[in-house]
Image (cartoon, rainbow, N blue to C red; front, side, top):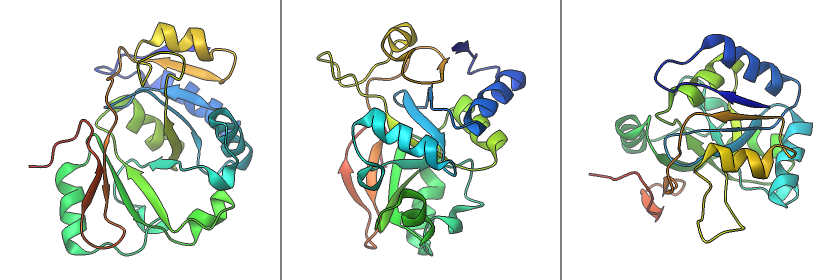
Length: 203
């Protein structure tokens, strides 16, 4: 299914349809403030396994990040954040950044792994955050890489539909995506270290 949603004027009925798919264990493709991403309900194990299979890995080896709506429930997924890290996150989120933080015991339980870190995203994209807000829990997510061309990422919704319509349950057309991923900042050991420079610029 291809669902066109205007990112400047998000239709709540469409968001409800997306969430219905997620609650049934579906995997979706959706826009963010950087590249298009694949995702599913963090609390649906079958959906997580399907997402991992689409990436060609086992769930316990998957390196998914999670998309949150805001900071309110972060303590469920990450250990206590020091003041400097929280200030940094509060300054740059929502935005095209992924912050790597120390995970609580909830993360290895959800992913059947011994993961000690988790990537946290709050994208500056109304479609993505509206989905998470309506769902009531984070999305497990991974960027949509184009392994069949010289481009690293898909950014054209029509091309995405052509490649993935038979692989996922719903694709959202939110306009052309970016071709650069997020800036990844590792704060899991205290100091903030940029491990991948992407769209996000630290001032």
